Image (cartoon, rainbow, N blue to C red; front, top):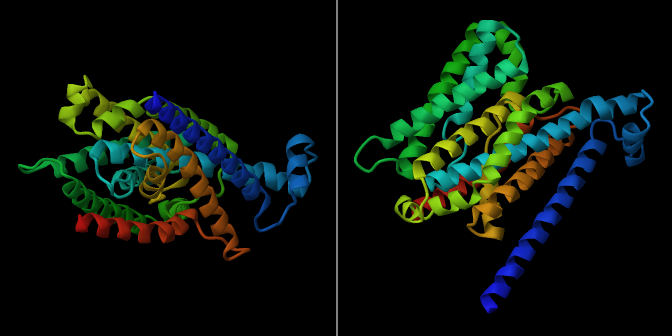
Amino acid sequence: MDKRVNGNQLVTMRLLGLGLSAVLLVGCLVISVTLGAADIDFGTVWESLTAFDGSTNHLIITTVRLPRVLIALVVGAALGVAGALMQGLTRNALADPGILGISAGATLAVVVTTFLAGTGSIQVYTWAAFAGGAIAAIAVYTLGSLGRSGATPLKLILAGSVLTYLLSALTTGILILNQRTLDEVRFWLAGSVAGRDFNVLLQVLPYLCIGLVVAFGMGKQITALTLGEEVAKGLGLRVGWVKAIASIIVVLLSGSAVALAGPIGFIGLVIPHVVRFWVGVDYRWILPYSAIWGAVLLSIADLVGRLIIKPQELPVGIVMALIGAPFFMYLARLNVKQ
């Protein structure tokens, strides 16, 4: 009876934490829409949504800031969930779409598509990102599985690092040889949510929604998988199917994020560790918390990038690198000691 009461209290606390996180997310949205190169008070922001009059401030809110903030939120959520899934699948504390080469593969595919086809639709870039991310993921897993010990966390990290360097070199080579491609993707390559509109978001949103919904439904299976494949099989889990579906979801989320905002690193690495500290190892909670806190972190990083050298701005990918690189070094040092 006591265990049941304690369990109910734990669920209540986690639901309360999820609600408070959602409130914080809304607060970040409001602050991000309000602040920028031109400071606009909240009353004007509200009027732009309820009584749009075509004024300059209303246009800034509805056509520039609101799409930008919403894209930051969905990209942050996608990368946070993708990172959590990857860490659960590989049982690797350092797993992340950027570190394991998926983002680099998606980036190269988009650059190659731009080089061959010129300016294309966001749908073309999205499918190119899916294909590039999937090929990179397969290559990393194949390389990391070579040898008697199979796909160990260390081998996956090394394979991902090597492949990332290779794909980044190929991307750079294409950009050096073709000025037109460089001009079209230069700002996007730094990782940025600026310059996108609602049309771009709406074209990618279905893939993101499908990925997030399926991921949230796999929390129980991923938790079982983290106990080890033999234990998971003993619990009746179809390990092969779970790994395949989760891998597809990771590619779907990472590819969509790259197509929308370019390669943004470290969210999928940082957020699951922060969330795990508060909610434990149950992925039924880790995944929704990672979505909300990934969105919060990226919206804050984008706001910092806009304000730190105002009226100029830093791409959000650079701000995330400044935040995530020290965290990665800390985790790497911790795992080496273990």
